[in-house]
Image (cartoon, rainbow over all chains, first blue to last red; front, side, top):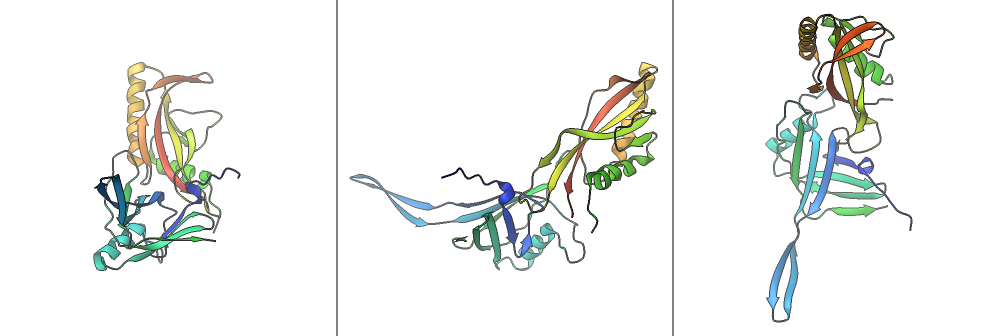
Length: 137
Length: 129
């Protein structure tokens, strides 16, 4: 099999039908499984009991960038977290052409930060509802 | 939509913003520099890809703003250069990261000695069309 290399340039991310590609510098979809460990007389035994998925997005802040129908991603997320924090938003994360992860996340308030010398960069850490689906086409 | 270019959408915009400083502003390296002068030139690394996806070219552009004054008397020239640097820093537009100001050096351009200091700036550029 030939070596396959996919990079961040192959990624595409939408949350609540809004494209994050123009602002996002990194995205991570990761699971933190809960494994219960039993110390048996034969040694350790493990039982998978739960999954907890998190979608983390690092992006350039775009406060105040709403123009016409184009809404600032930070402002849209703030509005969603403020008005409907318990309503999950659908997301789609394309890892590479033909490999798309989908699911829903709960909105979070974007943080506000900055240093004197750098572009304002924020990190959004979303709780994923359930387990994402992987669609291979 | 008209296709964007680094020349028109970054360097010329920056040059326009710098037009109010007391010096000749060039958005490229000129054949001859008339001091005091402000010259916008590419830095190294020049273009850095930082954003995800490849449907559009979006990159960080690193530029150097060279502040140049005539090098006639050492204290006078340094004072002139410092004033020029401060006036440049005051008018760099929003959306530009300002890095360090490098140590002034004496540079000979043709028969003229210039005292030059480089200001590192960067911004994000998105190619349209």
